[in-house]
Image (cartoon, rainbow, N blue to C red; front, side, top):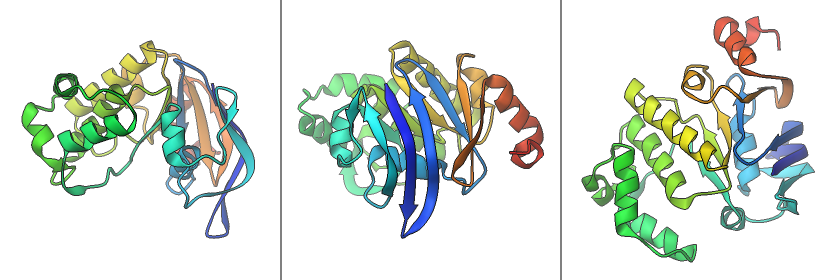
Length: 238
């Protein structure tokens, strides 16, 4: 289980998250919603261990182990995965080189055919792997490539930061199908999104957490996401 216990986080001395409590079990889907600037990405990067985010209170546990002070790479080795809201470009490095080296660093056997098969599953052809990482990619290509990496590395828990932003309908369906796939593999998912649209394509059993001004203000099921879709965050009075 991924457990967030009383987590408070500061950036440059300013408190951004206050006393966050959250549990994600194997195969569970948890949805984090909230207005812009509410702290959703801050929570994602804090869980993953980005050094920019100072944990000033609380703990992060992964399957019972306290990982609060571990660096990002060690959290990844233990089974955490983060997909970026805005995946960065890596000039002069092809996707194939990037992935093969990443697998070697992880101590996993590089399997070029498996990599190609996973990328084809996300409608990313073989030529995609010869391109520089994210350079000149469309929004849908970037987000689908992130989903392909999730399938390839097969984490225990995946934090997905707005995988549905800036994508077309076909990409959204592929992304939703991939999330459904990993849930069936008992991978826990924390999905960050502004909208309920992608949720209509996912299994109907999930928990919604509403983050406002760095604090969780409401929790519920799919009906809470629908209420936000209809009324917005201000109209929902969070």
